[in-house]
Length: 316
Image (cartoon, rainbow, N blue to C red; front, side):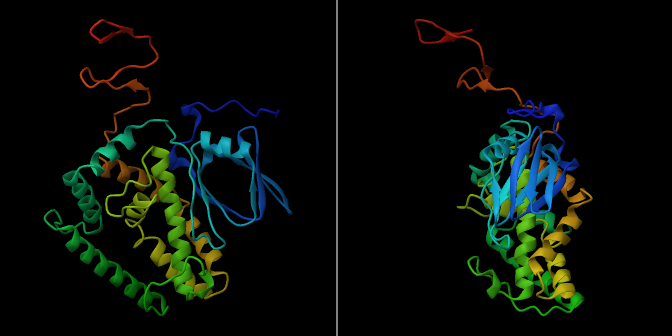
């Protein structure tokens, strides 16, 4: 039975694992509220209940009215929230890490703050795209050129495969309708992929803004990460959607096709493994408890009272 306060906050072991969750849910023109541990979505057709711990990312389109209590539940359950424009061309916010741990964030900050380790991670990302080649000696300029050539080839291959004419990638964030159908489809497909990528990043506790290749944007790492999967997912699906539907509700059709491609959870599980590999996260490392940092004695216990000595040192 529901009450004014809702159900108690879920414990960590009660929340669904990232790879077991539904990839994303797109909503528009509806009111989003909370009842117990479920997000409620109400429009002119009625109300549906969405278990908060079973969705990775919630895409909120135009006409959404969401309550503070719903956002509280979403944040507690680790669901990423992406506020999107009319055709899904922007994203703004996200929830808290699922395990409330800082191990991913600390490792990411450590790697991105050192020039040598940053290049190492960037090369890892490029190596994933060129598994049969050694990129360990290439400069960032060489890697960018190599990646640019690969993506151009992917566009041309998909154009030939689907019969969709391809010239170049172009779009305006403030004028979605001015783009060609294939560019609209690519924008919608990439946006869905960014949403899922952002969900995995923040759910594991990494920072969307600390990129290794992209930099200077609050979603730099999301763009880094999503680029690993565009050639397999968003680009082929955008061309397929355009071939099937032309300019007829192309953004909606593309989102649905991306959702269907994510449905089996294989990409989600792969993203989790890839993120751990990129950041060199020890699978057995658990850092869910808070500590106090000490420059001489290492991590110290949190939640105990310390006493001051005359020389300024502390004791438990």
